[in-house]
Image 1: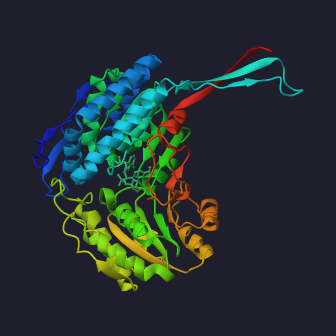
Image 2 (image 1 turned 60 degrees about the vertical axis):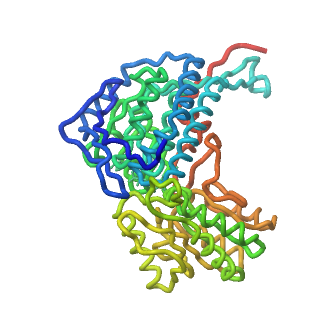
Length: 482
Ligand code: NAD
């Protein structure tokens, strides 16, 4: 398939319990690279959301484990067969480069395939009670049941296929019903995925997709009386709004990050520089776990910065549809302008730009900035773009850890050192959900537990295994048994 051929403009409808539902008001979906319209989606009103939840609640899922496994595996296979079609859609609506979009499609295959395999693994436990003088000759068993109500799922733009897959696959694996609201910025991929699921045999009442602007229908997704659980991935601002609005409901919040890559004096600097550049620029730097601060100790910072610049210069940034491009656009020109303003602010406070160009529309070139004060907005807030920000820190592990912990975030981290005493301290003292030795903070497999602490996340972790747990109620039952 030729990646340079643009898909035709898609005039979309919502999928409500399998029915196509349109509205007069439509929202434009634009290609961030050339600002062309790639699709139109319905602007749902609260009554559409209500209707979707009511229809979902009225349906009782009866799929056996085997049937769920077949649907999930078939979805994985269809995604694999159509990975280029999905990659084109992702690139068209998100501006992510072709390489990143293809990678995303392959990750989504893993999510669906792992969920299929985990569906047939039994999830019950057994507790013998004759283990204490207080116990009896009985056994207690656990079984996991789907939620009594419906899952409300709200997803961000940065992984249009994979973030949606991480909500849908574990929910279907556990026989739950969902209403999904993908972001208005990249909804086309989510709608295409819903069609794949219906084609794979999912009863359409188990999944509805509603679209539109959160200002008009966002709260309906959070407060619907039939929504038992709200699972949200996105910004801290919206996550906290959900926490304040949802009331007596289970909530799963996977929020922003400000992940450090820490480079100590004993590190192999070439390897560390490679991780820094890759981690900061893949997916246009728009991963919750992208490298958003490189904390390098003073004694090796000059040599390290030189290697980072050499590697950053090798990246091509430009037309996302060009298969040779390494870094596509960020999500829109407004975001690129914000990152540029933060770089300028850091420079005004003493930082130096070692490589990069000024933002052009939604194109933000990989930009190496050195000597950034650690409390500058560029690195203290989440800068969701391909800045490669170097913060020089004292040769003192206690101070490195204190600086690393000084932001409100606590998602993941990457560590470049071979010293075991350092490793032990980082694992014990970094206030994060993940510590990856000699890897980028974003490294994981799709079923390992994933999620942050502090402002980066509240509640359950994600990853297929944990998400399946979060989407179920544990029931215990017991009987006499010696
Ligand atoms: P966002 O918070 O702006 O939007 C996320 C979703 O929330 C969208 O669907 C949006 O329409 C919806 N939304 C916005 N306002 C709402 C409201 N008032 N009520 C209900 N829904 C509302 O986030 P974004 O810009 O799309 O995504 C980027 C953010 O997501 C970054 O902060 C990134 O770090 C984070 N993220 C986190 C993870 C994780 O697993 N921790 C993964 C990916 C992205």
